[in-house]
Structure formats: structure tokens, C-alpha cells
Image 1 (cartoon, helix red, strand yellow):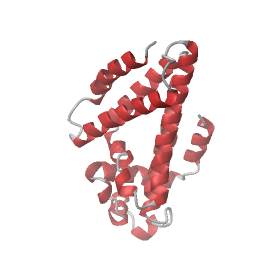
Image 2: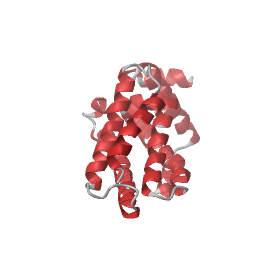
Image 3: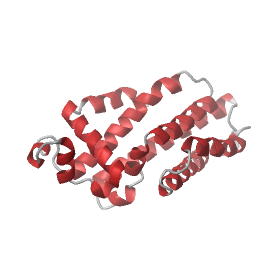
Image 4: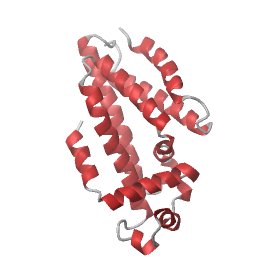
Length: 203
């Protein structure tokens, strides 16, 4: 899962860059991706726009850094959770619960991750979002494969197809939560969804 690599990604940012990344995330959380301008960000940071450009080339580089920082922190947070689980099903449950709990407690990041339509005309940003999705899907698939070998997950269905169904249902649930302005309890929605997935994947 490249946990050392994700730690390296975080360490490549200076402390000031991390401050800017966090400020950018707050701005997006308050008013959406469209509110992230260098002018607004400089105001949030209490310094001038030229000072901002000493740390990042432009707004797109800041957005890409927000995505990289999110991806690295997610991997680092997941590492101890997944290492202590034994079966593939247990690992999958831990990942599932962590994802819903994390987004419930950090709704701002949902606005970033689910803004891929805003990134469609920028190849670098689209690539960053795709990498997050692809890595998460690959992780889910690997847990399914482990579960199929240890007998905790049904083996008569393709791991890839099961991973697609699980990730697709997760994204739809989280997207609907976002579109209702986070009005429901996402953890409860996740638990309800898992009951159905559990029936589908058990042997």
C-alpha cells in the first residue's frame, strides 16, 4: 500500500505549504471549489498574493497539493487499522467504517474529492482524482481477494466486479449526502449500506 511513499509525499511539503493547503481546504469547505482564488487564499492566510506565489505556482498547483495531502494522510491513518485485522472481510469492514467516519467528521474534504467535474479540463487535477479513486478501488479489490482465499468472502464473483459495486455504492451514498448539504448522519447511512453489502459478499 506504499505507506512509506505516502509519508514521503507529506514530508515533501514545507510547513508553510501545509498551512496553505489547510487554508485552501477551509475555503473550499465554506463556499465550494469556486471560492478558491489566490486573492481569497492570501486573505485567509493574512499575507499578500505575491507571498503566496513563493510557495505555489498557481491555484491549480494548490488544488493538486490538497488532493495529494488528502491521499497521503488517508493512507497513513488507515495503516494501523488494516494491519491489525486478519481476514479479508475484517479488513474491508475496517476500511468501509473508517471511510464513512472520516468523511462524516471532515465534510470539507468531500467537496474537494467530489469536485472532479470542476477538474475535467485540467489533466493534472483529473489525474490526481483518478489516482485516489484507482488506489482505493485496488485496495478494496485486494481485501476481497484475501477474503476469497480465507473463506470470509464469496469466491463465485469477480473481485473486480465486487470492488466496483462496493466502491460505486459508497460514492453514491456520500455524493447524495453532500447534495443534501450533509443533513443526514453519514455514519448511519454507511452502516445501513454495509448491511446490504454484507449480504451480497458473504459466502
